[in-house]
Length: 174
Length: 286
Image 1 (cartoon, rainbow over the protein chains, first blue to last red):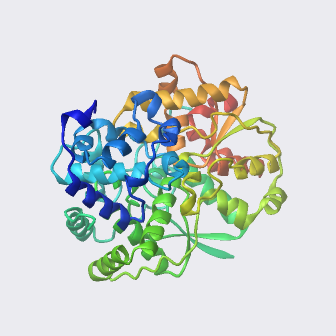
Image 2 (cartoon, chains in turn red, yellow; image 1 turned 180 degrees about the vertical axis):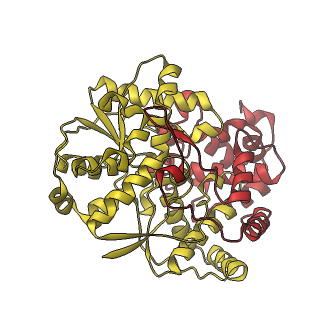
Image 3 (cartoon, rainbow over the protein chains, first blue to last red; image 1 turned 120 degrees about the vertical axis):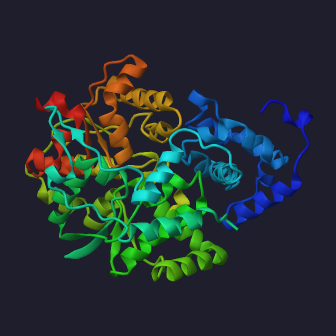
């Protein structure tokens, strides 16, 4: 996302949809960001992955929404919520990034990492993962049954659950 | 006797069995009856990046299932707890969202959502509901370790969503640890992330973050680390060896769930607390 301000033109229509989505979640518009960078100074993804939430806010505020969506950096956010906790203007870079990631997904952009698997698992079993066999310190293998934990509660009608969650998945926030 | 609907989420009942075992062993000792909620699923938190509507629906659905039994809820996973509290907050603040979700729950599944219930996490259940005095009375064998506390991001942030402890200077875990007879101290990396969310997209960075946190704990000469989050368990315990290799350090820090430590101080059998499943506990127990 280098020097976008000279290379591209802002999309104010998209910006106003972004503001609408943020306000639906009760979150202030990026308009009032004065670039103090408290979000970036505490960001858990800044040191290793060079995520700069204040840059995202600056680009968003200028209307460079598509450019933020095209850059992969929004997928580096760990969701630690330090930025929203510490923002003196009560904005939420983390939620702004969630919304833009939602837009990437609904526009058909391929999901990075294990996200596709996670969605599939939730749709097919109700959970992000199946029950794992785990090893103890003596290298003995255990599972829920052998530990004698009660049977896991799941959606009672799995097929119907899959159907309704898939239906909700195609709907946007508004 | 107080009934609480136990909502475990995905990671605890499918992988971090030691947390679940110690919860089922220890919490009922304090006159709390844990009732597994029927029909539940993932809380939706992992889907925030994909579709916020799915997250809100799944969280509201699990809340409504608990409400249908007229119980308050106990969600020991901070990520679930945050997602559930966030959903209540969002739906309380937007009639548009509330109407949408409430209607879907009613039409699709015949469920009634109000969001008017208390949702506890392990930390506020122990500290605020049970209280230090009652925990102290149960201690039969005081612990004599020096224990570092790892809260986990979602246990403390963000404040608008009523978290189990304060965002910047949490101390409930330390106070509980001291009641168990153990020592503890602040350390500057206490609020650092364990790296777990990065496992989805950047595995090496995730392990580096876990390794760096454990390295800092080791350098401060703690004997063990206490956690209240299954993602902390996954990163700091289950993946400790890999995290050590990633940053080129031998870590060997025993990591325990707070409920396991309470169980140990109550002289409960280690196998009933799932301590044999904590791969990092080898140094202390073998």
